[in-house]
Image (cartoon, rainbow, N blue to C red; front, side):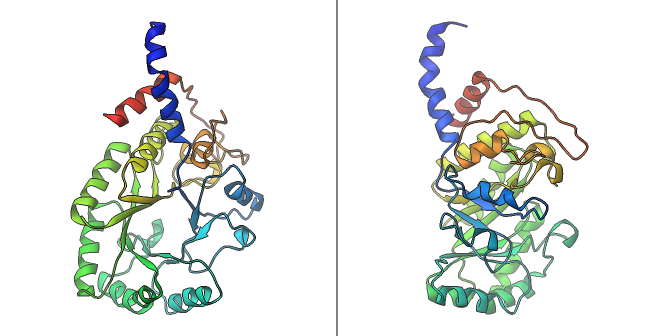
Length: 302
């Protein structure tokens, strides 16, 4: 390899690294660890770039009561008769609530974390518990359906059942798979809801090798940061690799609670060289190189 080539591509390489490690769009999908509660401090450390979080609940997590770093975004997870009261109560007490998320994977099954709610029931609940928040200046997220084709069908049925009475401001997206599938899915969402901004509130390349997981993370973060209609995103991986349900290599923490390369990049820092291991102690080692990062960057800019 010629040194002249390295010198010519160095500025591009450096700009690529910076684009991987800083973004105000990034948030936290908070998954508490009862056995290791001190892990929570990682997400609000001085070096963290994260600006917001959600916890699948309508009230904030006690772990972040003393932190002003993360803005809480309440979620109506499923059927509820208290969500509106919970959120308005927080606003009256001075909480800075400007967004809400709604209905976690209603087209999915409860066995995989979905709220499994019929679209007509969801529309009724949404109009009662969510729509009134519009008058308080809160921006309202559509139900966060799965990335499966059934998600598009369910969401269309939801809007039909709303009959124009659901004032949605943005569309959340969930995706588990490779980057090409993610980009295609977001393109389909954008094509279907042209005037809506998008939040990617769950995403990862599940059960992938470490090499593929890191490549997916780098490609997707650069992609999200380039698109102005994607205003927020939150990587699903805020847990230890030994308890990860999307594969150990997707986790942002090792089994010992150290930041992985993906975890450190996501928080705005450089790679740690810490390799994640699964519950059985297995790992897939990937020795990343400058040329691999550069190659990924070039592809993302084409």
